Length: 370
Image (cartoon, rainbow, N blue to C red; front, side, top):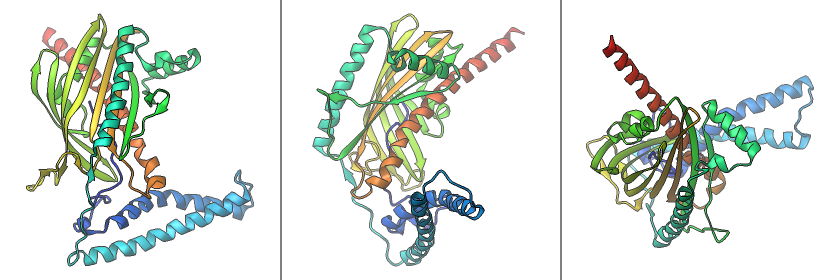
């Protein structure tokens, strides 16, 4: 259920720890480059020093002479750029009081973007339904070749999370999503000693998900419930260079497929970016006319009790705005890590919550039996 969408590298509120009170007025393009250099420069300095160290000692590096000549000027250039950016930032802040910069234009969710995502979702839904009807090899790792499946199984038993990026095709071809990006990941975790009811007890306990999944989930509550059909509210907070807060509503259905086996299906029915969260002037932006950090999110959970525990799989497909023109080479590698990291956090937090609940229940039972 957690935010597995993408936080695109564009916000007038982006800054560093200890953000200056005038940060909202600093030109956006300066902060984009400042954020990049701020994150990269600490890694370049040691590289430059290492190259210098080996040169002075006359040691042979694995790098070719040509590559060494390319890397050292790059390190020098970016280190120098950090100083120039500091000057630009200082100048921007000093002039902020008299000339505030305008907010960037919001990313508008277009009809063709929605249609492309709906097509992607339809085909993904068909594949999920087929797998569930088959009733075997329900985990993505089950479909791996035997040698890879053995390695993945061993990793899961070591409490690791196995994650894989998916790409639904339409008649063998990628689905083009104009004006947007589709992010699609699946992950699985093993919880030894757990029972299926233990896992469902955590996943369905939406009123406490702000505890289980903190700090990514800041607020959570069940708005309505009819049997295994839930309508829930979750406020997401995600920080990586920038901080984005989203108010979301989800429609969730749970299904008991067989003894020791269950799945759920969740769709966002509303996503609104929150401006000035936690302040007196907090407000929601118009959905679909915001920063475009998350426009849609669809989630499929599968749970299977076997091997002395429960395997928990979560698959998430989300829609965000596309990367601003000219920043693909810079932003692309950065933003693609967000869905994977969030899914990893979700599965690890689920395992931890299940284990903690079981431990607390055992402790209460032990105390009562004395």
